[in-house]
Image 1 (spheres, protein in one colour):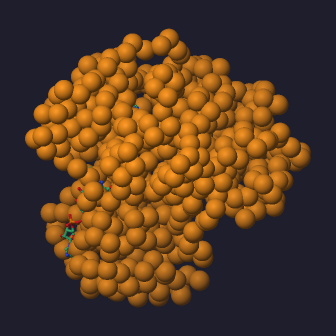
Image 2 (cartoon, chains in turn cyan, blue):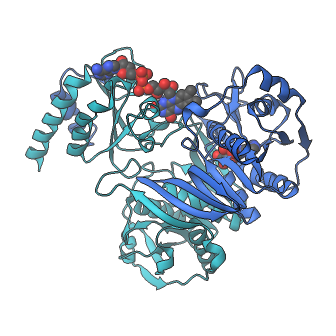
Image 3 (tube, chains in turn purple, brown):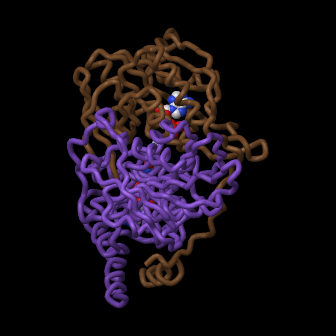
Length: 322
Length: 246
Ligand SMILES: Cc1cc2nc3c(=O)[nH]c(=O)nc-3n(C[C@H](O)[C@H](O)[C@H](O)COP(=O)(O)OP(=O)(O)OC[C@H]3O[C@@H](n4cnc5c(N)ncnc54)[C@H](O)[C@@H]3O)c2cc1C
Ligand SMILES: Nc1ncnc2c1ncn2[C@@H]1O[C@H](COP(=O)(O)O)[C@@H](O)[C@H]1O
């Protein structure tokens, strides 16, 4: 009857989201009077989950599960839930988690509540608060089914330490050819650079930057901050930046600690996708730009002056606080 | 190749969001409904398969009669025929089960849905549908090529993209990237006239359960006023000492 959590890793290392979903699962388990069991796939240090309240880790080591395969992972998680008699499965909100969650839900005939931002409000019936309407509203959603899948929003619940003893058990799900009918043939991924999904800080540029040749100063700023770079929709539509950097309602969602918007007006579709970020800074020449209304801090000024100054200042700051 | 495009009827992206009936219902008053943007990209890709590879394209929506104008728009863009499952789509699992029935009855090879509806942001219908039907599934799909029964799809991953080889029957959760923004079509007069004559079949829902119920809605607390500063020194100081993000 434990709460099952899928803890993601990459190249053997847990992603930050793994600790956040584990923390969330611990909170659910506490409310239900039970413990947390994690499913970890090809992870180097499954025992580290104990810090976040995971009492038992079902550890899968299987080369056929690298790289990620949604169907096979979902099948493994389903089997883990069956073995543990777990009725609640907690996952994250990475691209991979959002890929496998509905598969797991359908396999378990479970209701699925994605984008959950807070601990359950009620355990019977299980009711959770989740983001909806592209950050313009919240739904309080009751899960009616015997099995339930909860997708935890990034950076909303946070990572909470709850140290417990952890038992790591090898787990070998029974997988067959039917689980591998979608095959990864190539993964094209930036290495050594923060991504919009994982970064704590995102530096984003809009049409106000005038052209792709001006992105150097943005990248320098991002470098100093260890931030990922992003852009508004027209910037990617015009080919100034790659589509993968487009954020907003129809692009990637952003839920970072700090979002710096440079030369972006703050159209409703843009804000919808980035407003889950904790602190928002706007740099714009136009004091009437709508983004200022949605921001925490702002500088009314020319990006071409302000951005290089900010980069210099941050370098100094880093040097002093190193 | 027989394609089904699943169309979700959603509030226009510029809509203000309000709730009624003691915050238990979405207030549709004054809201303009449109084809879900993710589905518009999918529908446009389907048109490409129709024009270049002779595919037949049907659309399906689970919704009450009020969704028909949105469906007619999809027909005006070029879909051949529509199926409306006459039920209020209050839960993704319910919708997926209804669409599974449509797919079984229509023998489709390729189901194009969107990565998520921009209203309830479920992101669940395509994955559930694929699983209920035991079809292959690729989510956040940004490119799709079909040759015979072989499919090559590219999906967006965190920090990059992944190319996937799979086969029909296939369900995708599509999004921007499937086609270019400039390929999106605005229905012309001829399309609109033709759409009026196209079949839009209404079927009754099959009996199934609802996985979830939204019992209440609310809106984020209003934001405090922005702090405007004149210098980057002040900004860095605030980010460090007040916001504590540096
Ligand atoms: C269906 C639909 C979906 C959409 N989805 C998205 C989405 O997901 N994401 C998204 O971003 N947009 C989306 N949009 C587009 C959105 O409506 C806006 O058009 C877009 O966000 C504007 O981009 P921008 O802020 O870069 O450009 P603009 O609106 O042109 O703003 C440029 C800003 O730069 C400022 N500026 C100019 N020069 C300088 C300077 N030297 N220094 C500092 N500031 C300067 C200007 O004052 C202005 O505020 C969508 C639109 C539709 C219809
Ligand atoms: N009521 C519906 N009718 C038809 N298709 C739907 C409906 N709801 C969702 N879909 C499809 O499923 C995708 C993802 O929706 P959702 O899971 O609701 O976020 C949408 O982009 C549509 O393709």
